[in-house]
Image (cartoon, rainbow, N blue to C red; front, side, top):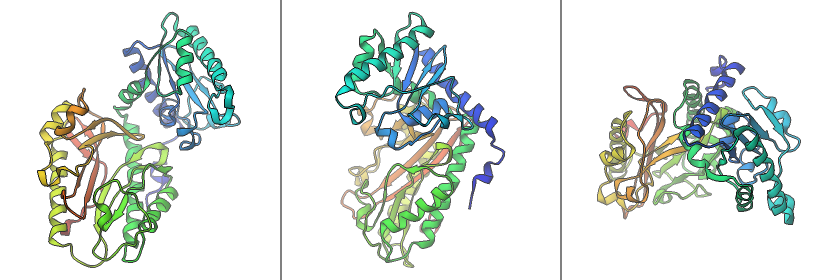
Length: 403
């Protein structure tokens, strides 16, 4: 099993330089967009910019902590009451700690509007003190009352999601090292699942072995429950449940794991339950998915435009198109990231700007199910872009016997 001992040379100094790199990426993007700063509520964005983590899943839907990163000023962390000691952990870098002005209804009830005005007043004062006449303030997400209150303070609210997605695209050497470690933790969990896969186990029981192994290895949470078997593998996006897996069933899954240090391992595989050989239909489906995946991986190179990549990858054959997955590829770091590359037939609905660059980390995936089929195959690899092509970060084997 892979453990944190693999990272024994990754010390507090490395964590500080990691946070410095990420926060500098944010400030460079803010400067490029002529923004005075950014308010961050998304816990993944807060962690990216400050290195701090606190109740990550709960604070995703309860905005009780936030950070203000000023382009030419300090980073101010407004930490949840009673949790300021968490900002003393290795790798956390903030210049000032303040008590948050919470304005979510769950906590302040009918005082939400008044609290939002107090919140905006404090933010506006900090922006004015460090940014002069620049009133452009990016915000990644905020309740309507907060946005209205910022506008009432004379601030021009800009799209903070765009700032953060663009900042997060290019990874440092340390980030790629941590992503690689998260993948090893996920793959240990996949091996644990494979070891117990047999007829009679339920989907949820099988899925729990990935969770137990990964959490023991330092993983933090799973973003989805995408493990299904037999007829539940088609169409995709059904979640694991209490279905009992039978001999000869295909099992398809996507890890979607937020691993150690908050980095994502996003890998998909399809297996067969029991001692049977795959049917001809199962084998043909698997081979087709594998070949499409490998072809699309081979086309991925730095400097290729996102839209151009979608075109060269091409649409799926007609017999699979109605059940196509939403993307051919996507960025990944502390979670799924921009860009999301759709199939050419969907590009009109998602115009793509930008190009692949060295040190991006990308997931390339393929889900295949015949339009009228009863099973689906899901395969996905995670790679880093280098100056000459790709470096595969995920290493779990495919079903060579099927190929």
